[in-house]
Image 1: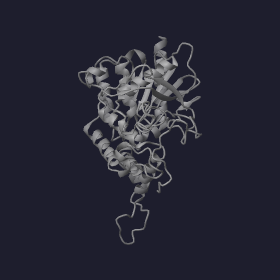
Image 2: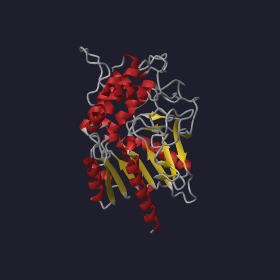
Image 3: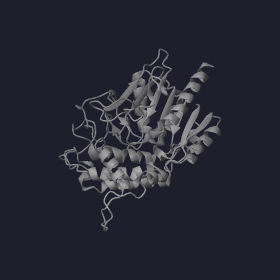
Image 4: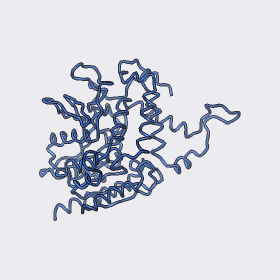
Length: 391
């Protein structure tokens, strides 16, 4: 697909239509010191809410998004939101996250590109985009900015913190870092510490962006339309998309069907699966930022709840609340055994833990696709958490 019309970044920028976004501000009077040693000032966090906080402040649910997600969990296309919410089928009146009953919140993560301070944001010292000067952030840094949002909204304790993939990493860190501020946890298709294979997939995607000459070392925001690092970001997404789906899905949907006829061979004749990957690469380029992709994928690789805490088991011993782990039968990126490893550590310390496995052929992306199964598990868990609080 020709990208000559695309701006250098798909990031949301101040001055763009805000859509449903609301904004919280932190680090206005003192620096925000990052886990890796960098500092940030004047941080903006974009978030969205659905439903209303009850008088007791007891019905708040935090949803944490995955790598290329954002705060737009639910809602249709409108100025400021070019796509439908990524969990739209789960959030709303009468749905699993029933907004007549729960106050649902989602914040764009630190380092992201949809309203929260990230590489495309203006550096308060210069007024120009941070670009290559933006420091490396961790999952723990993201959670600390979400605490500021909770404080801003008057939420002392979440009824549940829920998230899949990178969102599940945030869920686990909430339970470890702020056990007194959560009443239950729902990590979905995630891991307690990134494995070598997961790191390998992330590293290859980052290399694809780094090798794009239009990346310009991370300082590309003044590039004219069509000259941003679109090819590198698209390729990184294509690599990731292969890990998000299963072999069965690829085989059943595409088989060996071709785009161009195989009447004589050439190197660039395409199979249908290649066109599918092209589509997903180009789709991401329209709404994301290459530097944010680098930062957030690196944060996922750095994820290890046991870092500096005596190991994974010692860290998870800090979790005190009932936890529902959701795994996916066909997930090869974050396979079910990794959900059971989390559960074993929790159960060893007497934490109530339950496991639900999504029966789906869709692979890792099933938590975004098979919403009937995910929703049923979430609704049951939230109801049980509320009943336990009443006893």
